[in-house]
Amino acid sequence: MSEINVELGRNSTDTISLDAAESGTYAAINTASPSYPSDARPASMSEWYSYDHSASSSGFFNVINSGQSTSALACGLTGPDDLTLYHGTSGAFECPLIGRTVYTDSAQTTPFNGQSLYWYSPSCGNSYLITSSGYIEGVFTCVQSGNISIDAAASPEEACPLERPNLVYKSGSSQAPLAGDTIWNDSNLASQYQPTAGFNQWYSYQPSGSSTVYSVFLIDSSGTTSVDSVSTC
Image (cartoon, rainbow, N blue to C red):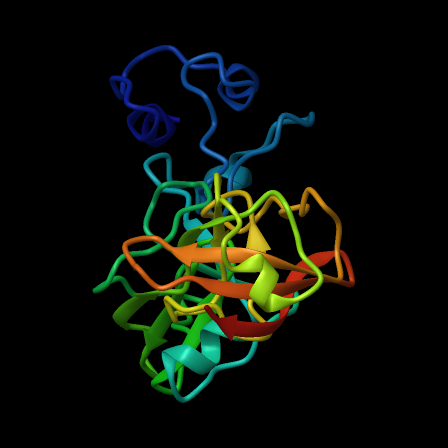
């Protein structure tokens, strides 16, 4: 029992009840530990054998389960980001930085074999160059911003001069819009942009920091606003 006291940050000689310890009376049970005692009764000494009161919970993020040879190819992917990778100790969703090692398990015992390919995380808006040992060698933005018109036109020529008051974000690493890019309200690419004048029309679009204006033809692609065609003004 003295060892349990010490693990919980108490004096080894303090009076202790096993039931009270498992109920978190002396200190909250750290569920980030790979093994921890439950509050079920009867309480048992064996529940404490592998308990680590100072264990940290992994941070995590998600990528599309398809590595690509370039960042541009990775950023162009669509689909569910259903591969969860773990890193750090935040215990919450966290986009990793360059130099971090990522793992396939929350205990961080199995490094992710990234095959030195680029892996796209739509929720982070980045592609990640990950080595075979799970080391992140590079982080590349897949999100570009620009302003788009509220009004629409029947042709790209008519769309060019339209005013562009709405700030939007698009997928892909290219500043210029490309066919297949998706348009969003936020930089996390989580909130679908709904064109004010509807789909299947031409809109005026200007990338942030660029003097070039484009006409983009927007369509609804399975619930995602996508660029179908592009014309330079």
